Length: 87
Image (cartoon, rainbow, N blue to C red; front, side, top):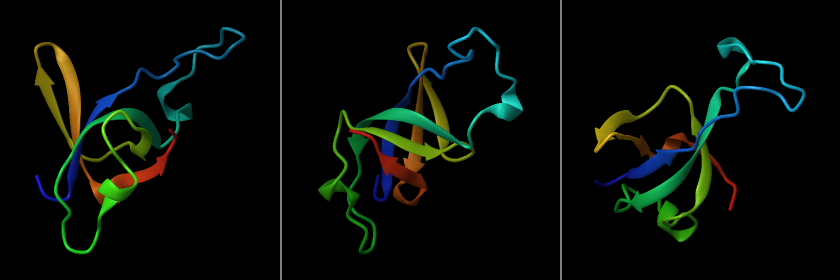
């Protein structure tokens, strides 16, 4: 899909290293995930130059579309909602 990436969300840590459980409102406004597929460029944006499958990224928490395939959740997110590349 032009302008989109498919992401497999990574599990977020629910507790601190000392064992404290974090409430939902204490979590970041961004999530991490592994890119599975990169769509064709939309307009002038070409994230395929710096994002490829297996790249770990930060993306905005309340964005994209969730899809459930064989019991696994995936997110379809616009390029513009990717915040940073981690690897």
